[in-house]
Length: 431
Image 1 (tube, rainbow, N blue to C red):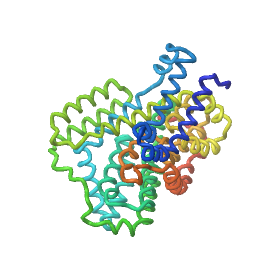
Image 2 (image 1 turned 135 degrees about the horizontal axis):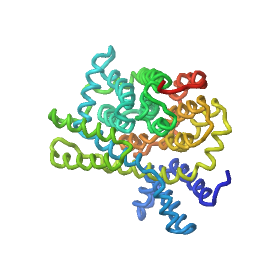
Image 3 (image 1 turned 180 degrees about the horizontal axis):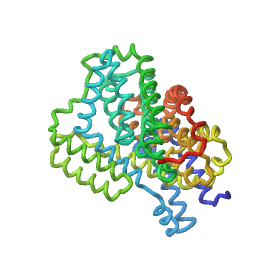
Image 4 (image 1 turned 90 degrees about the horizontal axis):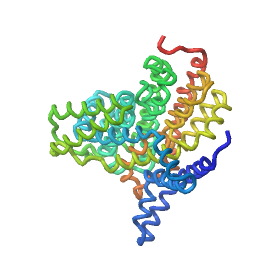
């Protein structure tokens, strides 16, 4: 496939944006050493701003090279449903009634485990909430888990190693924990309809493996850092969410459910979201600060990824077609570290002639690599936005995250990939 000029420019800008995500600490340093333009350097030091910024450069380039009509048509052809959905679900999931309900459930389950309180709470958040993402969606699970980890552990001062290990496990587990169903994980959602992957298929080929891996990763992290976790004071500072009326909890669960139900229909779920904002304003005493800023930044990040990602098909498609199923799995994992895994599987769904084994390999590689970088999986920026204030210089270093996530990726890679051989036979879903 011969790329057009704008496709080449889009790929170059995409590469620059990736390099920019690894350089945010440099811009934060400039903000402190060159205060005259501190605001600009702080802006460029926000990971969530990076892809939106370079997407703006791409659109501006289109205006100059192809004209306003072509640039506008390109933007109109992009699907921004996912960025809007992640924004809405993130804000609702981060409210006091939802967080109070989730925290109560985690606390009750952790008390039933034969472990010290801190260990059982840490394990439960990293094991239960990511699997819950298969039903409430991965962005909601990421938001809940990050908020609970922040309130229970990060606010009490964790070592650098434990910070990055926790973030790595969280990203990896959320990425694979949403594969029990065909609608919760963005990379699965992109292909489920096209390839007819229904609930039984997901449970048979992905779900049980995902549950085993999530529990194993959480247990390994808990045991590795058991000494430090046990040293945290039993009177550790947790956010006091206050008493929430049962009717308010039910109402917010309904809002969350409706947004999930209409995830493919932005007019519907944004209407529900606006109504939710009205209720939140009317009953402000039952709410903490809504995470609108964090949600908007994450939505901006994903929108930029959609704009830049639309210019990458010219090289992604031939790469996928040239690989066997084994190569597709590891290739998808590598590519996922540099592009959103949902965009990768979506492009794969457009490729005709992929075998069943290659389809499985593409999605398995995409979800197993979804925790390696901030941009690898759509919910990752949400988790980073919530927890970054507790990292040194309020910066999550990409290399630290990659090394932490890479360790747990190695722990679960074999389990997830083990099913490819049985999928590589003719398989009719829904029979």
